[in-house]
Image (cartoon, rainbow, N blue to C red; front, side, top):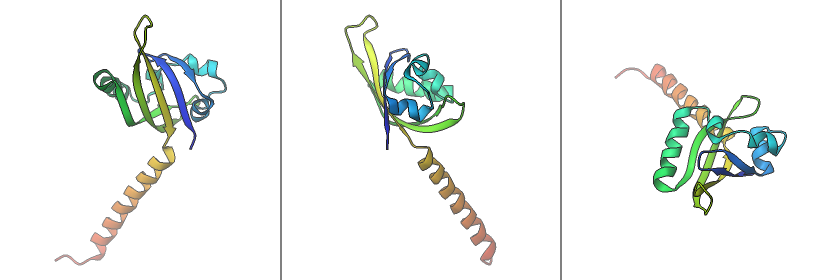
Length: 130
């Protein structure tokens, strides 16, 4: 499974990214992605704010699942691992993260849940009431 890697400022401005992240998000080149911020990639603002709160408090966010927006505006589920790195730079910190596309897994989990509900429905209709 390709793993996207990035570095960003504490405010979420992407500074660097590997080709796997470009591929996951559908960007043709690094320069296009570097114009984006991490907050803009999140489909839901509240997910970004919760993620940012974890980073502020813990300095690390592991296995955080959320939806990001691809360049074509479609959504993809990602699992991110991010750590805060103290630097001697002016703002003092950088974010260093990895991103894995888990869209297929999330779709399979969703399908499984629907199948379970359908089965429970069918059983409730098929079994005589006690």
